[in-house]
Each structure stands twice: as C-alpha cells, then as structure tokens.
Length: 250
Length: 230
Image (spheres, each protein chain N blue to C red):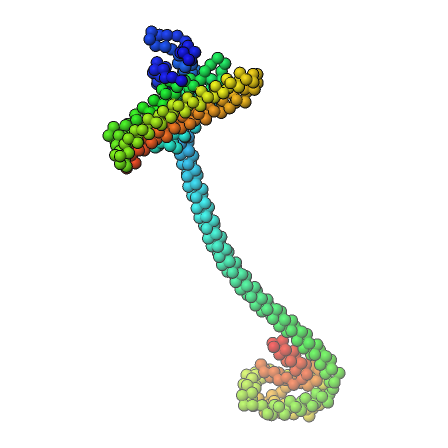
C-alpha cells in the first residue's frame, strides 16, 4: 500500500479521457436520442390530448345537436298532433252536422211518406166508405125516400137566404123562353108533387117557370133541378159525389 | 514489497506504467469500443444493447435528479455516470483471471477521490462563483472554517481509502480462501465479490454525487442566483 504518483496522475488523465470519450460518443448521442424520443412522446401526447379535446368538443356538439333535434322533433310532433286534433275535431263536427242534416232530411222525407201514405189510406178508406154507403143507400132507396127528399127540398127552397135567392133569380132571369127548367127525379113524381115543385121554383126565381120532369134512377133517391146555369141538388147521388169530392180535396 | 511485486510492467523514461494503468486502459478501450459499437449501430432503430445502455443512463439520471437541482442534472450527469461505470468496471475486472482490479490500488482510488474533490469545487464555483462557494465554508460561523477544511480533506481520504480497503481486502480474502480451500470453494466468495463490487461502486458514486450536490446547494439563500449561474 503505497501511493505511486505516476499511477495517480495517469489515472486522473485516464479518467478525464474516459469522461471525454463517454461524453462525446455515449452520453450525448444517447441523451439526445432520449430527449428526441421524449420530445416526440410529448408532441404525440399533446396531439393526442388535442385530438381528445377535439373529439370531446365534437361529442358535445353532437349531443347538443341531438338534443336540439329531439326538442325540435318533439315540438313538431306536438304541433302535428294539435293540428291533427283540430282537423279531426273539425271533420267530426262537419260529419256530425251532416249526419244531423241527413237525419232531419230523412225525418222530413219519412214524415212526407207517412203523410202521403196516411192520405192514401184515408182516401182508400173514404172511397171504400163512399162505395159501401152508396151500396147501402141504393138498397135503402125508395119512392117514399124520394118524396121525403122532395119535401125537404121544398122546405129548404122556401128557407133560402137572400143572396141565394138573388142568385137563383138571376139565373131565372137569364133564361130565354125556349130554355127548359129540368127536374130529374129518381122515382116518378105524382102531379101534386110536380105542381108543388113548379110553384116553389117560380116563387124562388121570381118568374113563371115550366119545368120538364124526367126520371133518372141513377140519382138513387131525390131530385136534381137545373135552372139555366144554376143546379139544385137534392138527391143521394150528388150528395155522395159531394162528399167524395170533398174527401179528395182534403 | 517492491514495485515489481505490486504489478509494475514497464518503464517510460522516469514514468513507471503499472498494471493498474494498463487495466484502466483496457477498461477505457472496452468503453470506447462499446460507444463505437453503439454509434455504428445507429440510433434510429435501437438495439437491445442500446436499450440496456439507455436504461442504465436513465437510472443514473434519475438518481442524480433525486439529489441535485434539476437545472444541474445534465451538467453533473457525465461525471457521476462515468465515475459509476468506471468504478463498477474496475471493481468487476478483478474477477477475470490474471487481472487485478484497479480499485485495489490506492493510487487509483486516490486519483478518483481527488477528481471527486476537484469536481465538487468545480461545480460549486460554477454554481455560486468563487466567493459564493468559499463563503459557505464560513457558515454559519467563521469558527467552523477549520472544521470544514478538515472535513473536506478527511472525506476525500475516506473516499479513497474506503474503496481501496474494501477491494483490497476482498481480493486478499479471495486469494487466501483460494490458497486454503482450492477448487470451487471460492465460488461463493466470488459471488460476494460481485455484490461487493456493485455496492462499492454505488457507494463511491453516491458519495461523490452527495458531495457535489452539497456544493451546489451549499448557499441556499442564493439559490435563485445559482440557477442563473448554472
């Protein structure tokens, strides 16, 4: 164990040379490589971070747009539903109104049909009643009935009102001498009856009349007097015809 | 014990080239070849050797960064890394047949200790300036100046003798066991040699690093100026 100065100095020199060699050929290149790699990693990290931020921003933008679209979609859907509701309500109202109108028209039509039917039935019933009444009166008709009707005719003629008398007289005045006053009877009238009728007509017409008497079985019972334009009905045929016409008019 | 017995090989005028120097040159050659090989292989496509060296350098840089200020890491790194690598190689080369570890020579360890001593002041003066660096020897009181000086000398001596003593004793123990027990018995001791070599290299480098860090951070109030000076 002794200190050799030559070795001591040479070791110092050797170490410094080794330091230079390693610094020049090992440390600098390796550290430069490490620094470059670290710098590259930093840049890549920064770029990755930037990309991540951009992706995050895009994601947020996308989510915002998505939310806006969803909101817009919801608003449009609500609006469409409201419009549909409104349109449906309006269509239903129109349909309901149309149905009511149709129902009213149908009711009117039905009422008219029913009324027409009822009228037809009434007419049929009246015709049937007229037919049966005529058949029954034909069976009841007799000279006595005709005489009774003549008596009733004479009474009514005597009880005519002034206006009716005026009409009868006007018809009598309008007769020319050659015109006939025709008296038709369902059964043959005796002379007394014929004179009574002639007297009553002359009195009512205010002039002398010479009626011609004829028999007409179609009258069933009673008489029919024709004075010019004026006709006096006192028989069952004309009465039935009167009721039949009246029934038709009603 | 004469010089021939200690491994002197040849003379260059008045200079005596010892076995220690020759071994050191071989180690330098090995490192030089390694660096050349690394350079020739290129850095664009790192090889496994490249990766291993990068791992070693990163580990050393991390260790340095844990002790010295961040701004001074790259400045201190070459010296400390070279110290670590050289001492480790010098310690382990003793395992090879017919080779002796340079660190079993007090001249080599003293030279390394002297380099640590000088580098400590070099980095301290660069960081704080000559006045600033010398000023910390008088802190907290000028009375402590002799103790600081004694501390500088003794720790340098301790640095040299610790490494020398450990490696010398290790080789002597291995030699004695080899002489006594013969074949295969020294194998565990050789394994212990490996561990001891690594530990001693680590201790030597870490102590040097701590001394340098102490010089860099000796004037804490001037730390702002120190950063600028670095």
